Image (tube, rainbow, N blue to C red; front, side, top):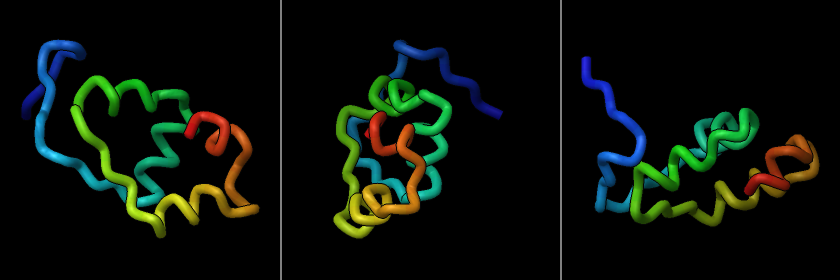
Length: 64
């Protein structure tokens, strides 16, 4: 098992997230972890649409 200490490792390859994964990070106010780990995060249009959907919790939309 590998553990990473925040701020010491940045991955330079683009990362793609699906809606469920991204919503979980945003819901618990942990989106900053993704920003610290990855230099570039690509959010496909379909994921953006799902996050902005009417049934998505407001806290997730706000953190997005």
